[in-house]
Image (cartoon, rainbow, N blue to C red; front, side, top):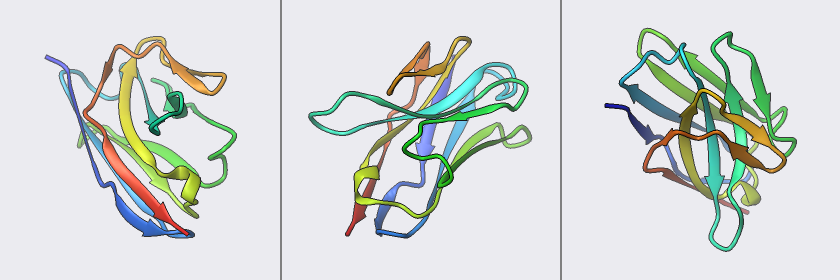
Length: 124
């Protein structure tokens, strides 16, 4: 059974940092594409970052240079290091997995599994 469990969200001031974690159960993190997307009430889902089985990464333009996606195969955990946070980064962040997972436009496509989400709030 596949399970994705996020943690690490919280409240920070603009310019601060947070690291989100996603513990993956059911398959090794190196097999499928993994990624993060976020939701804000009243807005469409937004793809944030993805990492494929070869370790290649892809980011939304809005987070390039500030966010870093990574994985730890020993802990079977996916991470999202978020630096220089801005109020517009406030959202519920979800960990996602899928063989065809990718950022498509502003959205994320190919999500087969996702977690329950973790709230990130950035104040100005």
